[in-house]
Image (tube, rainbow over all chains, first blue to last red; front, top):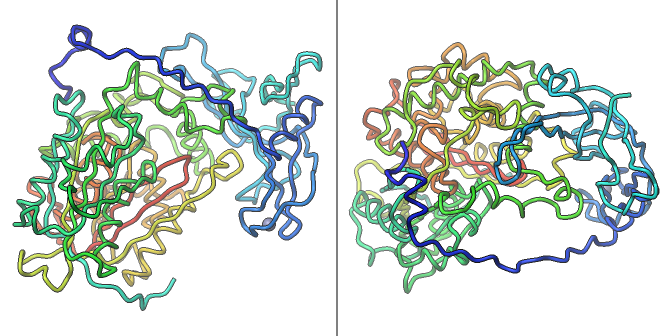
Length: 165
Length: 391
Ligand SMILES: [Zn+2]
């Protein structure tokens, strides 16, 4: 049940319209700055914990388990396994999308199917809605499709998507 | 975890709720007051009897008012008293009860009013937009994610690993909306079919409109008191016997999503305190957090009430029905009652409280109940809160 107020009635009421100038300059920090520079060069860079060996992608300067500094930059492969994939028919403001946007998470190599935590990325996946709907894409091996070097700016967007190899 | 923890016994003796509705005309403060007044009335207390107040509310951005703890304080009876606000994302509602518990258990307060409120409908164009700032600004936000994406990702992973179909998951929505038709506070109770779910609008495949709980406004409140004085106010105190809460990291893209280990940790903590060794045998009724239908199954497994991947099968057999072995979401859950985030979590605790007290009315489950569990979950598949109560 919905309240008696209808969408049109909401518009008849006094509403406070205000666009706050709430713009943020986020800092990427030590680990992610190196990660972003790596992407610009077509590399996916992580950090390894000297104590437990866990590899963090995206990288982190400390190990959350051991609570010691990670010590080593490591380049992982730009290939991995699709852990999950979805097809979005709505935008972030919940507007309807004509063509679905397909995203998912990728477990990058080196890693094993038994790992609960692994080097992993959230990204777009270049495949069809049908590949998602039939779950064909889940478990598939994929590789990063890099934007041309001159177009890379040091952002996760330097990878266009992950596609099946 | 130690079992010989030294703390005071804590009883729940009163609860109150507003109806959960979309676009409620009352302010958040008015809603908090209504729920608080009803909880005091059920407990037979006046505000002057209350020593401490706990307020639970999720992101300020939903109601569109910053400092919501302070903002809600007078509606929640907090003026001139020690007030604290708790916030652990979607897990806030049960954390509000847990926080109420430790205010009393510690010996600091004898009588606590715990109040949770959320107004989801004011945000424009849609409350979804409010979630823009939960993502990692460097690695995730450039991809313009919306909140349903990650839940769809978790749902699809759960389906893939455990070979679960959308039809099996839709049965949760059918069950909970049916249960909600017995709940006078519910927004979306009714009879729907698996087909209705499968034919509803596709939001983010595999999530469709009827897989998701509705946008709602609401408030809920409970009164917790020291065990030594509980029987002055009621013949049927409901005891808080175990609490647990844990957090996982924000790195959800680098974690197995098929199983919520953060919930298992929280559940084990609560069960250890409550002395529960075989959850499936000892728990009579459960309110797992169900903002999405698959989440109830996911959470029943994390609560150790079903083996990994086994919850859909048990559901199909009627194990979690209102007249089943372990009735699950007899209130109708978030899917049926509505999802004003923090209030929805405390609603789950209240549902168990009323079940154990035997005052759940038409919602009362068929079997006699002695031990009940409520659970909530939130953030980037991270936070879980669990409470065990007994009569
Ligand atoms: Zn380590």
